[in-house]
Amino acid sequence: MSVLLLQGPLGPFFQHFAQALMDKGVDVHKIHFNPGDAYYYRLNNATNYKGESHYWSLFLKDFLIKHGVKMVIVYGDCRYYHQCAKQLCQELGIRYLALEEGYLRPNYITLEEGGVNGHSPIRHAGVEAYQPIHSIQDEITIPNNFFSRVVYAFVYYNVIAWKFLKFVNYRHHREYQAIQECVFWWRGFFRKYWYKFREPTSEQICEQGPFFLVPLQVHNDAQIKFHSDYEELECFITQVMTSYQRSGVKAHLIIKHHPMDRGHSHYGRFIKRLAKQLGIQDRVQYIHDQHLPTLLKHCLGVVTINSTTALQAFYHEAAVKVMGRAFFNMPGLTDQKPLDEFWLAPEKPDMDFADRFRAYLLDHGQVNGSFYCEYDMTSKNIIDYMLKHQMLPELNQ
View (cartoon, rainbow, N blue to C red):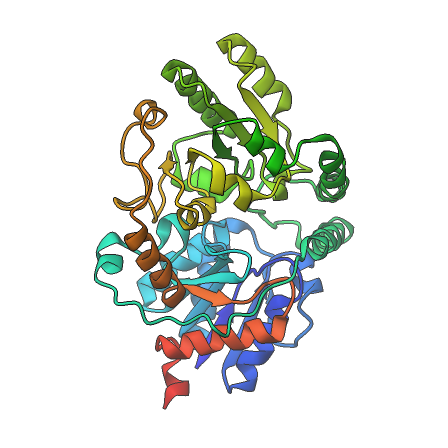
């Protein structure tokens, strides 16, 4: 069995995962695209791709055939190099597995065949016919690892900056400058504590009265670019606030910034200016790091593009309106009415169906673990999942 790993999450996880696969007798290959990839992966089975991006498909096709690769595993299926890989896998009959942050956070990561999020193979019919069999009695709680992410990002982008001449043709999946990216991550770290000092707690927000919650996503999130019609988050914010103003509802509108985007962007002035123009400045509040489950439990409803925050909202019986394309936007889970009507009569999820949906996810794509800690346990759980779902058939024999 020959497996190819492309780009992984920031940090050393892919090295641990590759070693776990090799310990099972799997022939593992890895391709690096930049110095940061190489820094976190020190095994001797890696190949550097230094060519221009438009030659990538030709290089990869020859590589797949030469090494008899039967499976390609990526982190983030919307990256340029990974999209090309997916097309080639479909052409050559090679299995394509995508890893991503967990749909059910913080104790899970996602692993799906063919793609994740908007490309997920999960459909309403599959959930409806599912007979729950999953038990989570052995679930391991994942500790907070935000600081590890900050350090990994800082090192990754610094290494890219220091050694960029070794991979001058690298095409990053997001617009960035390495040094600037480091500054953003450190700024996010300090902002976390600044906001904690300045802003009200989730309990204080709930005590203010009824409210709707709008959880923002990372400003350059692939889910926005590939699975929605919004060019930027400001367009989404404008549509939501304008619709909210037209509805005339008196409940407050709470707009929550994404914690992983804390150092990169800020919408305070934009929201304040727009709220004043709409005459709703006394009912709109912009927040950052409040306890999300508490807000979900007490809100009247959630409006999102396609954030997996919706999956937490279902658990708390909160009504959800999806404005983008998402695998979980289905009858029984999300409100199917237009946004203008949602404010007046938000429809809560069918909890029987929501429970079935959660159980389905746990058996179809969720692996207990983390990319940023508990590497060996996570690697073992991924391999066990792959064996269970016949993704490594040679090892089942």
